[in-house]
Amino acid sequence: MLKFNFTLCALLFIRMIEAQNLSPTVVNSSGGVVSNSSNSLEWSLGELAVSTFTSPADLLTQGFLQPTITIVGTEAPFDESRFSAFPNPVSDWLNLQTDIPEIKTVQVHDILGRLVFQSTIQPGIDVHQLNSGIYIISLFSKQNEFLHSFKINKI
View: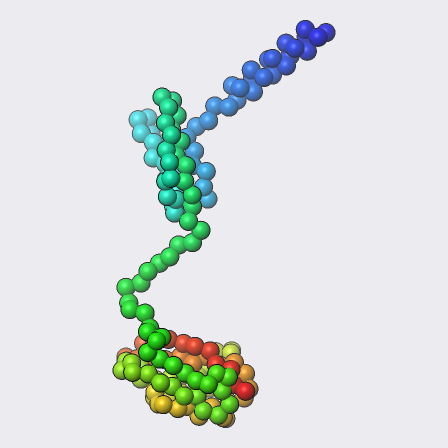
């Protein structure tokens, strides 16, 4: 009986070893393998190769994935160092200081996105008529292009 159990275990072990035949695979949420009879292309998005190990039969490339994708625009960002709005929270007058000549229009939207006030850029905006709450101030250029927005708290 012991001989039979040993033979059965050996046969199962040999069968399990045969089942470990792997085809080329990219293990990644955004990648794949494309191959034909002579070539194989394996790819993944966002992966940087760190090391590659080869043997006569195998090729293993280890790497890591970048968790975020950064898209860089071609337009110059708004220079916040050249603009200031104070005090925040505000009760009566919101003071705006800037030397950015492109700013023409200031819009005030409530938290629901409704336009509650609009004017040309001025050193001060009278906000005493607004109810207490959070408001979004948006700055627009002379061509009516959006430049920047910020949040104020009206008390």
